[in-house]
Amino acid sequence: MKYDRVTHKKKKNRIKPITSIVLVLVAIMFVIPIIFTICNSFMAESEIAANYGRVFASVTGKGSSKFISETVHLKFIPDMVSFKQYFTVLFNSPDYLLKFWNSVILVVPIVLFQLVVAMLASYGFARYRGRIREIIFFAYIILMLMPYQVTLVPNFFVSEWLGITNTNWAIWLPGIFSPFAVFLLTKCMRRIPAGIIDAARIDGAGEWKIFTKICYPLCKSAVASVCILLFIDYWNMVEQPLILLNDSDMHPLSVFLSKINQGEIGIAFAVATIYMIPTLLVFQYGEEYLVEGITYQGGMKG
Image (cartoon, rainbow, N blue to C red; front, side, top):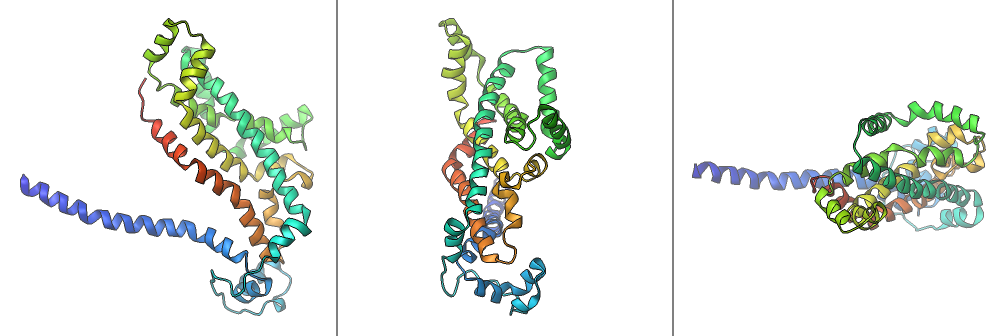
């Protein structure tokens, strides 16, 4: 028995370095595209053409005579750092900043109000039991399992019926009442021990006080993690604006990225870098909350 334990321990110690190496390689694979985009955003157009001309010749469709490279040279460090693309994006072409602020205007209200609706609805689902509640919550789960493309056509018809097509409300309303946050926060609130709530009720606390002083503080990390997930999800939305917003001036930057000066690849790199900054900052700031919120889902029992 002692020999088996020693053997098992030796095998476990051998597996740890292999697992670490595999995880590092996977992490590098995920990080390389981000580093590649950021580094190439500081390259001049001529250098990008020299390194990747053959690749982008088929993309632009403007003739390969403009490009001098027959082979692709994957390059991370520019020969000469150039800020021309960023100057063009930030000062010479207001379209890029307009699309960026379109993204902010569309995403921030959805995240804020969906959290408000989700927290109140989750408290109701967690506190009150009954057949009707179970049916409604089951419907929420079914809606959450459906891909957004399935509900896109009904959303379009409802928006036309309400007369809000080609307005921000066509994006805001389906997003605010999305079932994703309700489902996650309900599972979180159900794990709050009933004894805590009963003790508060005996002390004379009402429903609002129980919600604000007990349920919300205990679920704060889960709320933060849901906020991060919602922001990343809606920041990258493409289908909703394309279908529900006819005016291209109202489209967010996520839609506009595919149309950005296909002949000016350096600008495309610069805009993609600017577009990544909010999500990277949100994740960097909220990484601990995200991990804590996911861990909390299995940390408490009701």
